[in-house]
Length: 71
Image (cartoon, rainbow, N blue to C red; front, side):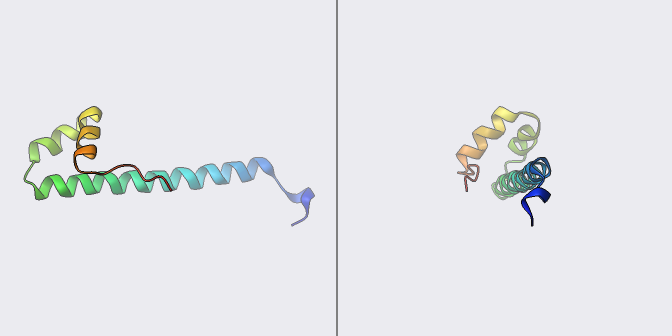
């Protein structure tokens, strides 16, 4: 690629899109793991509450050691 062809704005948008997609996938994986662990433990009430109470969900993430990925 020739330097004059480089589009910085396009590059930044592309990197943001990739970062968003990766973060979204990691978040979904984290929530799915929490759901599976709560289901295995028979904690249906906690599962339902975590879907509507973000603070409680964070508490459950900590309880089950499901910390966000920091790669």
